[in-house]
Amino acid sequence: MPEDRQAGGFVRILLDMSTTSSNIIPQAHPNLDKKLFQTSQTLGLKQADKAFPPNQELKILQWRSDTADQQLLPMSVSCWPSNNGSKGMSCIVEYEVKGQQADLFNLEITIPTPSNDVKVDNVDVGDYTFKKGHHLTWNIERVDSKHKTGQIEFLCSGNKLDENSFFPVTIKFQSPKTFSGISVKEIQSTESGGGGSSDTVRFGSDLQVRGAIILK
Image (cartoon, rainbow, N blue to C red; front, top):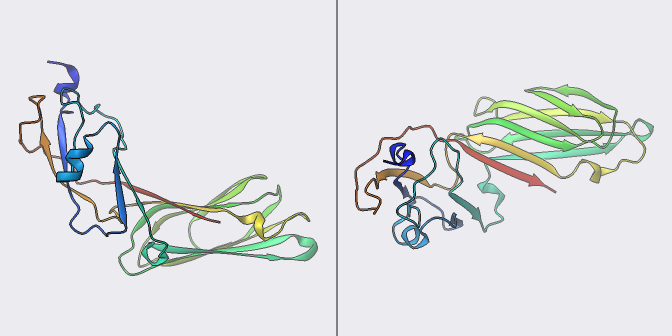
């Protein structure tokens, strides 16, 4: 028996998309059977004699939203640069969680700082790292209903700075749930190689979702 068959990579993944918004447009990986996905919301390889590679992180489904409604975002981030004359530019960045259900981990807010001299005057939650002449990254371990807002304030020295110097702002985070409403309902074994088996495979409940937002 081939090693990848022993690893249990011969599976199909049945999705639950019953609560998925019409604004969410999913796209399956080119190696997957797109007809199978479109007709039964199931992820499976085109070639039934192939298996998913074991012990690898794979991106087999992605989605985008065709709406510009910012209310769908789990949080808002504002950047307020201002001119301090000969001292350079000061900047206040703040975040705010929307709603009571937001639960985000490892939030990273990265602000361009085209100056070698940056002084952080205040950070009321989390910590920060600074790469000279490039950017400042604000790190917050967890954002939830108890930590709904936060603020960092810093000063960049230099006389060639303007408001555009602090954009684009990049926000990255992890979440224990999907914002698309797509979830895994069941994983079925196709150990025969032909996709005929429907034995249910046990799988862990841990789900890691990564998101990224760019403010320009």
